[in-house]
Length: 469
Ligand SMILES: *Cc1c(COP(=O)(O)O)cnc(C)c1O
Image: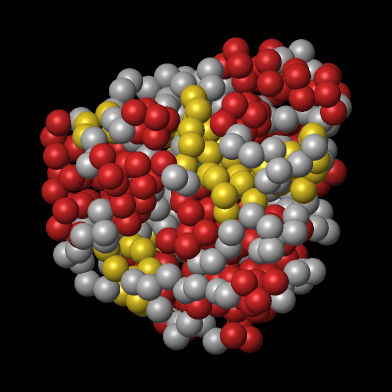
């Protein structure tokens, strides 16, 4: 499988190189040159497979040429072996033909584990083979950091540095990062905000001299392997609900457009999907595009669903690429005008075509809490605020009651106690078994000034399994 850049100028890469690449050199994102397509018979024959076996069949074409089948199978078995629920991604029914796909049974209780548990293992496998080491530097406001640390803690060939804004992440989220120990794990609290952290990561990619030749790898949601891993659970959910003979719809709490883009790919790979709903919070650039063909940056608002607090959705470029007939030059122009002017619309036919599949809704904090309370009253289930946004959007935008509606349950409610308490249903919440003593565990973290040089000096001093690079 070869991968090409959405902006058409960077060299095509194989899977192994895409895994290590992050952004393409032309500023674009990598996508498969040709998407694999499965027949209905083939998909139907996967019914009843354990999750890791299904994952193997869905992802195999993407890694062909880079990872032998037997090795890939073993990696997948290990990856999904760490989940705490036998079904890996169980469906829970809320209402007639309405289901939540619970994606929060991984080690850090959010769907990001599906991708980052795999990414860590894939990186280590490829690096071992090449005899190389890498350094990961990432910024987090919450879920990504802990999932990345959990995903990389066993990696022999990776040192991971996660920057979070000092005193500005929730205690559960901080502890999920700082209580994991390893000579290759480094938590840094920056005396600044999330944007400062992100800026430092960006600047570190721009000038890597402090790494003395060690390669820097990105684990944010633009990494292709993360998207790839997320395609699997769309197939999994559909197969539980009568697919592929029957079409299924999905409502997806969305920030950077990674998770829902995986659903779009599943459909293009042959899975019958009737409708994809983009569910956003008040940071609604994607909803404004889907409802009014306006892609315009606005100011950032802090909400009760912080993992979706974004101004621009980085993975949306991958959909725009397809929307424009995979014309890299057109995309490069569009993205550069976006950077300069802050907004665009696409041609009417392209937008109308896109809307045949996608609907959208923006849900504010008050509606989020109302939905948590409503679902609790109706079912006894406590939803996390992101999932609640998905439920609200599903109920507002649903096209057909005959088609099963699956809402992606992106996080466990204990991760977001503020919203759950505001909704008045917080008392019943308990940490899952593997985290019951989270608040008693020892923490390890280094506080650093909001200063790029200080951070880079720290990385060069500790970037080789805690020793200097
Ligand atoms: C990251 C995250 C999202 C948003 O996912 P995208 O792929 O960025 O759209 C939604 N909910 C939770 C709980 C998350 O951690």
